[in-house]
Image 1: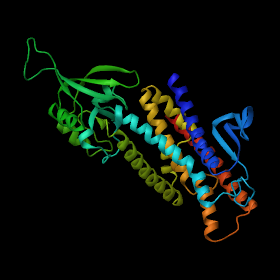
Image 2 (image 1 turned 120 degrees about the horizontal axis):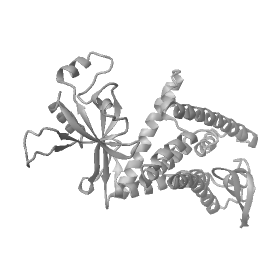
Image 3 (image 1 turned 90 degrees about the vertical axis):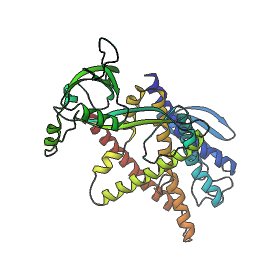
Image 4 (image 1 turned 30 degrees about the horizontal axis):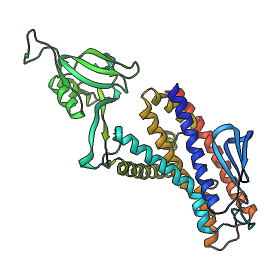
Length: 387
């Protein structure tokens, strides 16, 4: 529970720090900041008023906001956002993005010191400063009626070792079971093939109960495995779909790894985003449902990761911070990138961006974002109930 509360506070802090970036950039550009709010209105309390800025605490704990003086591009009053130069506006709009990206890099770097999960096949590392701190085989799926299913192995469990019941080589008397580690998918494949059709002791970590268990399993024979390949659900000797989980630890290169990992996640995010948009234009919503997560979904994931420790919560916070940077850089009306895109577009074509026109553009964008928020929340709830 403590980790969940800490995670929620950290998530709120990401948005507040994002707004702090806008605040600092605006102040440095000579733009007056009328209000710096923690949470969203309605207002609960005015904390203080300093240098013309009202600092408020608001009832909806969804982050924060900055209200600038003369926020419209057409405003020419002294000290207004509209009177700032184009370059100053670029810095004000992208300051929050820069803050969130920097936070993600810092957190990724700190996690790399303890062991950063390997999530990309070509994940960047400095070979001379990389150590595999964790290596294990996790269970992605269990075939119905398989040896693993009968032994109680479930999705998310980790396979530790086989203990050979009747060792072919006796290292002591009386003969003790010889443990055979299952640290890689290759070890699992070779070991289960070697013991095909025999009964052995499987040692695995039960993720749901948080305990290590030992269970007898009779592996399928080679003939049974071959026969299953012609069915709708082919089985391996043990009957699991494994995936190899690694954590890579760095020392002096951790900051470099943090930057590179943030870059790789960013590129992958844009790739997935492109796939989602492409599928939506073709009428396929399944990809969006699988890849888009909102506040409710994040809360559910946070609860699950809290059970795995502080590092897992930090990793989620880092990914969300990076997601905030990416989303706010997109040319979507009402978001930072959208406001900047509209300004640059109108400046490029020398169109007049009136207050009314700007409010109409970003008001429509905000309404669409709220609709998307509701839809994503519904999908999150359906996903959680379905699980």
